[in-house]
Image (tube, rainbow, N blue to C red; front, side, top):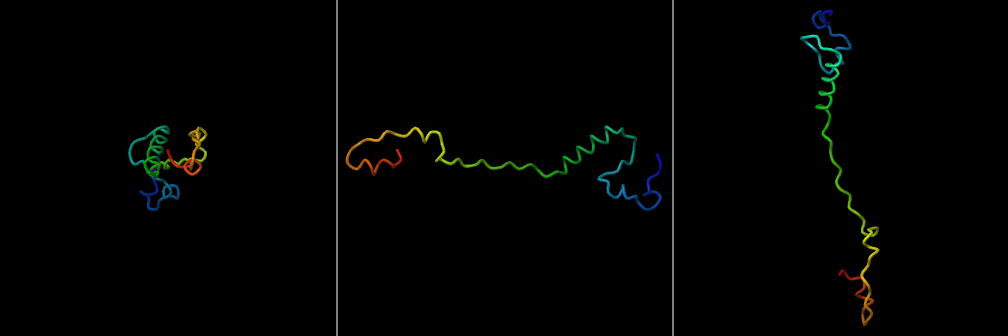
Length: 83
């Protein structure tokens, strides 16, 4: 392995863009890839859950099963009252 540019003075453009730098050991490509995934997941913003949407009662299936109307005086007025 060649000495990094930081030891010689100025860092290379790749080293300036790097998210992290391996300073000791000789990791395999798979180990570096695993480390990259873990660090990217840790730096990612937390996943927010979307609030539950309020269902429109107009299109609710139970709206089709309405209460039977009772004929009588004033029944037309009370037909829309909640039961």
